[in-house]
Image (tube, rainbow, N blue to C red; front, side, top):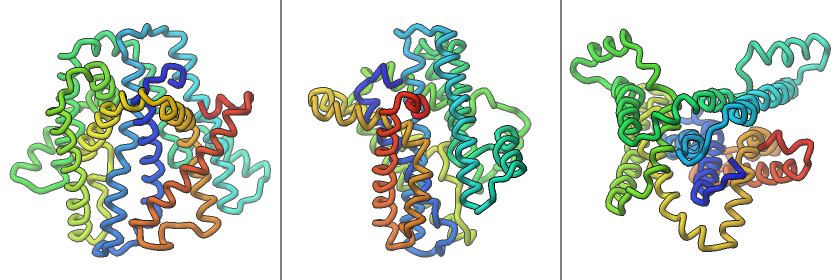
Amino acid sequence: MQKERIVYLDLVRIIAGILVIMVHISAQRIEDLTVGSMAFAITNAFNCLSFSGVALFVMISGALALRSERETDLKTLLLHRTIHFFVLYYIWKAFYQVITMLEKGESFTLDSIKNDVVLALIQQRGYYHLWFLPMIAILYMAVPLMKKGFAEKKLCQYFLIVFFVVALFVPTLLHYDFKFKYLLKDFFSYNDFYLFRGYLGYFVLGHYLHNWRGEMTAKKRMLLYAAGGFCFLLACVLGTLDAHATGQTSQHLNTPFSVTTFFTATALFVAGQSVDGKIAASEKAGKIFGFLAGTVFGVYLLHPLAILFLESVGLKTSLCTPVLSIPLLTVCTAVLSVSAAALILKVPILRKLVQ
């Protein structure tokens, strides 16, 4: 991905990295906030927005992996994508198991290392952010099977329509009451549409938006921006109203698999495409974005450490109003993570751990 840079994808990758950090910053104390407070409404708004980050990461991968002009060598795909991501998953999983032991103040004995590190590699999921690595590895495994079919525009559109209905629209709708709700719920519980669910939809969406980006007129782009902005505001309002009604945090729309996140993420991706020429025209901007984009994977892997460090020195979202604390802590976490990733990238023996 680093060697085949496409300028606007650098920008989208940076945005995705920032949003993924914000997911975890905004989630720090959302469960402890009074649901009727302004602090909760602001924190929930940041949290709703930030879930677009994961979708954007998957869309970037789809845009790169499914390109029709790029030949897919099965050996290279398995070695440099699938196996590489799985190896990184277990290396970082072991590392974060050690971090967890340190957090809990556990002693490093043979038994604790065996149970909390070695056996945990198989028995436990791993630190909260690492799930992304096996997920994207499995998507890359399917690339040779998908590539020819999704080279055709109509097949992409067909898949995305079904994905939107069964993986986004219906699950979002079922969180709310309406006539014949339980008939619809029964239908989808008895009929499994799993082939059209999951992150594969965003993988194909990224490919579709990239491959046919020339067909995105200014009018379509503005409509998409309006839809993205409206859906973001709708998610904020509905999330706050749901919390008020139940007395606890609502996660109905704080997920990549909601209609609101779909339109917000799509609008952000297309917005990145719209500034492609401006970035490419500036050599200085291109270098800056290229450098930052090159560290984003490392930022994803390392940012929980930065969050732990900031918490250890007393820097949490509870310090002041979340409208200030969440953006500031997101920036601080990003700066620490970029610095650490850049240093690791300079060490040849460690470079592959963050690439």
